Image (cartoon, rainbow, N blue to C red; front, side, top):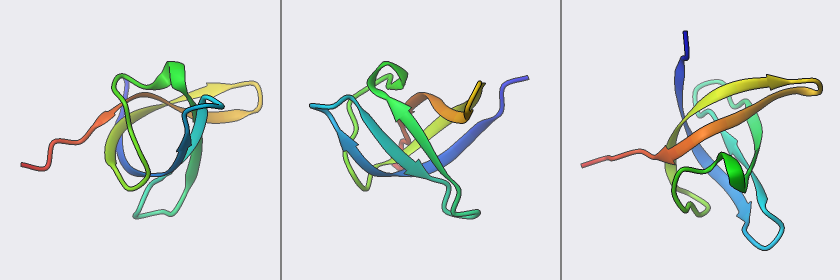
Amino acid sequence: MNTTYQGVILFYLADKGYGYLRVPDTREEFHFRKENLLQPVQAGDMVRFQLKQQRHGYFADQIKLLNLV
């Protein structure tokens, strides 16, 4: 089962290809790479994402903008 989370982009360095996002309720932060993005993002954007586990811990995947309309 894939659980979807909501978060806010803390920063994204497009030229380096990585960034961090934060889950507002828990203040947990997760790393992501540009290949984990489904659409372009920038600092302050609200997003939906899934958590995936790798050898060194969790990272954000399947990141897309949250439609707040």
